[in-house]
Length: 452
Image 1 (cartoon, rainbow, N blue to C red):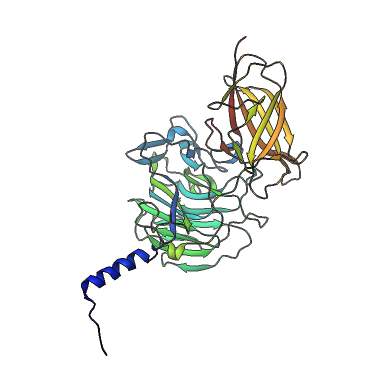
Image 2 (image 1 turned 180 degrees about the horizontal axis):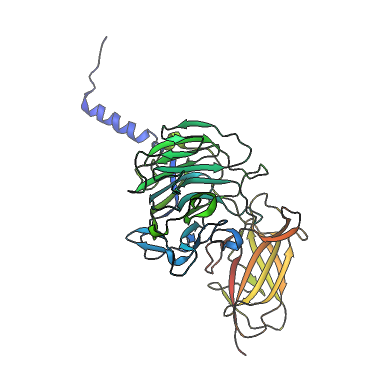
């Protein structure tokens, strides 16, 4: 065979051409960080976290006969660590403790927290995913995912045991993998040593059809699971809970509480949530974590990452006036105000909604005027950008002062007993006014009524 020597000059040119004409390699799909808290501040970030359960209008501070009450005073940050402290104050007949609940909600993803577990008979810390509001404003249970529950009751549950279970509807439970340390019948992981003597990292993959628990990077189990409510429909998106319960006759307090062991602290170094993406934003790791499971093995396909919500837009007008920096000054308060509210509605959003607006006094919070419109009675107008435009009329504020215009969407629906109830629907707020972190109503703009 005859060969031809082309020389280094030609080879160098050929390599240059190859580099220029070759398409850039696409970055592999992977995990994208969507939520995290490293707890590096001095106080809890209340834009990220609530401190009570979502029930009872987001005020519930215990389940059933648990012996704690959740109080903000028991949530303390120090040295980059969140401390949930359970203690019994002098003369009290219950413990005060701490809970954090994420305002942000999710469908699916990888969840990770680095924790130091407490000691003492009666402790009951947990890291779990709980169903939030559905698009009608209702809550559902099930579904629920308990990433872990750590119970010490002095008899059946010991310091080397960790419970991990989930509640869905209609899907048989099948373990496709179980580590030797995990009892699939009891849903318990058994460590060689006590689990409350050092820091540990709990990781959890929630995919549309399966869930997987990791402990310090070691896979503990994989099982089938679907996030279904009891009527067989997809449950609302989930928020993240980390709480330190104490006692309760069903489990942690079944054999009493060792009060001499308290105060006790459930420590959390960080919480991170990543979702799987096929875009260039994906990476091998969930943030800086070295224990992230491989997205090639634990990734999933789903169009969902949260629940689509109607969005109140910033260009609400009052009497034909556009707000400036989120505020409007009213000069004529002798006749009703014409309000035009723009809303970006999700695709296939139900029309059985009522738009309610209210003017409230900034100082007292008292509502001084309100108006409503059922969207299905008079279909909203559409703007070129696709936003719906709803027009209402409301009485003006009665006196000079500073006021706020709020908007919300409500639905009238039957409850489980068949009685009708009116619930505010979850919404998103894209206005120029500071908003509460979790919205079932939006602050649309400020109104100033100057003295004559």
